[in-house]
Image (cartoon, rainbow, N blue to C red; front, side, top):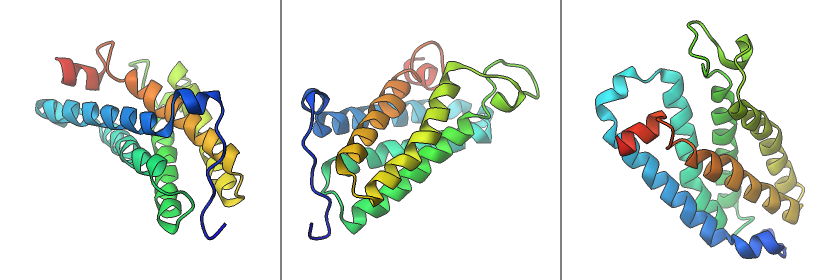
Length: 176
């Protein structure tokens, strides 16, 4: 293999949503989020530190995603950036478990019984992201790539899209 992981042969989803398209969608999501954050500067002091950590880690993962999808696979830089991406995704998922979706004072997210649909995604990320790293280390290229693509589509792009509507913080900053 010459130090690199060979590209696997893609299925229908790979042809419908090639890495280039996923990378472009990730860049668009990143741009929208950065613009929203900049537009919301007047409200930054009202944002809890946990939300800033969550936002920083997911922005880091979103910024790394196009590089990971488009650059040569299996190189030392791909592996290094991959571990950073894995860490950012895991920290994003962990922080979301503490989010107070019920609006009750003293609520600590799932740890005090406040469970929502987004927490299901967080648990899925906590289970799947380590598998992404394990599959890469085992050179299970097709399973690794399929897992990465699923994570990018589900946990970054779809979940990221839903941070903008419904009067959520980034949506109100971007469109408000």
